[in-house]
Image 1 (cartoon, rainbow, N blue to C red):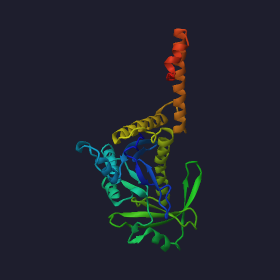
Image 2: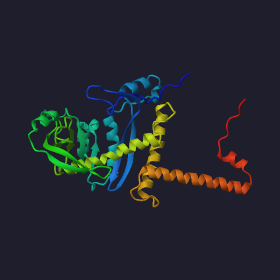
Image 3: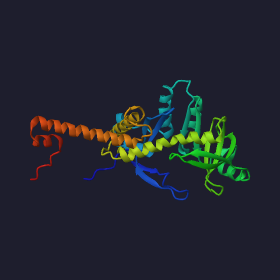
Image 4: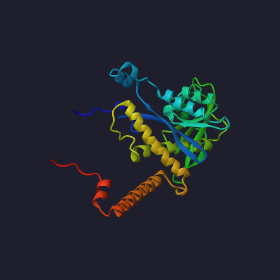
Length: 314
């Protein structure tokens, strides 16, 4: 009998593989993460597994009433994590919440502003500003001069963007916002759009601040490629939740060592911490094996203690 797919797995829209004319879908589990950065300290703060409403209905058909799942939208999950964070933050902190265009709903924008937080996020081109889509604003402003903005890349180089700025109100959002229309070159036909609720920031400050969202993408890479987030061999929703908690605990441990351990040099990355941890583990293992061999004066008990024995062939 074959093993079925894990309960949280389903087909989801894959925005990294999709094109404007050809959407792509990937079978997998979707999760939402909140990352906290305070000065030079940066940690993964919280995460939540997301289930489509259709997936929740399918799973509940096979569950007793007491164990049925409740559908939670991505907005609800994000709000839950941000509300928990808000309860632990001092009012003295000046907070900017960063997210990409997939989370730039009016609900989330309004929630952040009610906490006294500012938002810097990407926007989709069909959002309405003062009754006009951002695509139309890009066309209407084509004769206005660009402002050249230089932003440092993660590799330490400088990248220049051409930016036009417009202020106004999004549809059904009461606060005035600043929207950047950003291009890599004058003939760029697919500009990026960014929103900022802090009207005192310059275009360069907005883009530099939004760039601080990139570490969450680095987290995702390490979670999937180095820590095995997607390698679970369990099926139930509850078991997958526990697997995610273990993997995120490992990530938090690595982040703590990177920021606070004296033996980690400045400028190191999570990959350096992983290599050091593996080296330390290998040294401890070899030391324990040598000490046991010296104590017993035999090799075979040491091999039985530290090596997995192959099953007997019958």
